Image (cartoon, one colour):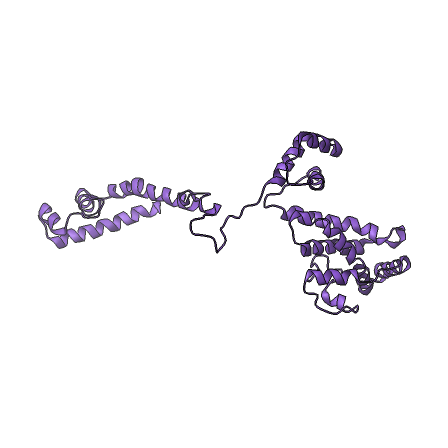
Length: 300
């Protein structure tokens, strides 16, 4: 598992950096990573201050790496508390490591506070942000108050059952929010995500929501095409026919517009009607269709 970020890029926390400290074996899975992280040595206060000063004064990345690695177990512990949100433990740890690296970068050893206390805020902040971004396609919490309610509601619910009015009232009073806000947030959290497309091995007689959510005829592109087609058939066709003389119009209508099935008059039938040759009827038809095509260009 590669727990690093291109955004902060303070120090890379990788299986290689763990192995460099004497840990052997396969770190390609989350269990091995957690085991290795929990066995990393912790720093004394003096060691922590010394490393932090080296980082601040000399931009010593080796010191930064030591600070990060010694606190990986803290990230694992905090991330474990957010497993109830249905997100992979490895992803939660990775986001927590991003927060840890930000904390190390900003840590001031002269403030008299241990890094473990300072880093907790940054670790939780990154995990919170990750959960809010991935909980649903539509965000369940957008304001600071809603975020606070989101996480507190998750921790106060003891099961999948809907909260009773008394529980809602008590939680609203505890968090100093309106009971309606608690009810709305619970409804959001109680919903279940549904896959739009059915699994590949699904039975033929079962349909996913994607199959019936909308009619293809209501798809915007098709609606525009249908409107353009209707306009071409009515307004455009009438305009094009008006450009023709009476004989040419009669020939085009008899040949192409008389019957819906396309079985119009033959060249010989029209030749007898107008007292000319069939070839002359064909020439008039070709000329008329070219003129109509030019008139219809404005409607395409």
